[in-house]
Length: 234
Image 1 (tube, rainbow, N blue to C red):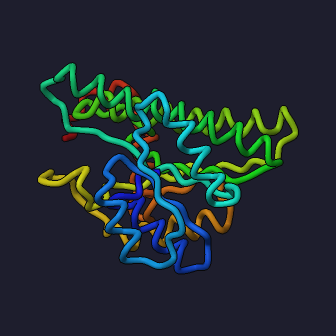
Image 2 (image 1 turned 90 degrees about the vertical axis):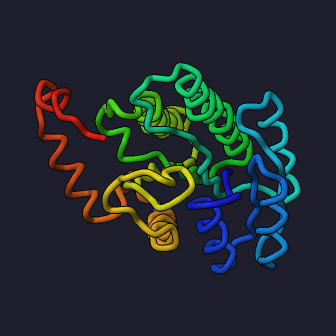
């Protein structure tokens, strides 16, 4: 989900090269067509907007076309640097990263519960590990996503389901999402995709990409709230 560009597209292509039967989905039909036409390993495409009421139904249709769903990778998301606190941007971020995310993951979890198991992998962000004043809704929704995955993991245990989750937290990746920004340490999408697929294959519960961001996250988690909130990070 979210395979029309950036990380999602690169992960889909890499999984296809490794022999997976891959279905791609996203909002932009023309980009889905280009990705599928250029890569024989992509078996199915489906135009899905995670904010639409019929998104879960269309996902179920794609799963049926594939013959089932053993792995779901969620890479759909939006966000802005929003120091001006534009309310429309904040609400759109919540609608996509919060409501849309919940719509898709609850639907996938239920589909996998019916089939007896599966693996849910979601690209969240290091932004979910601390509140970022430059991107309030983005940071908050990414924290929500990580907690939701943790909840689904526990729920699978409560219900005795063989459903695994992987919370993938990249640093700043050089994609359309942060185009024209001044974030440091931008990561190349292909390298990030390789790390993601490796984490999925190893069924890691949580992974921060890459080692520099693992160190950064470990350090900023040590900072008391009163210090963090006084830091001017953009």
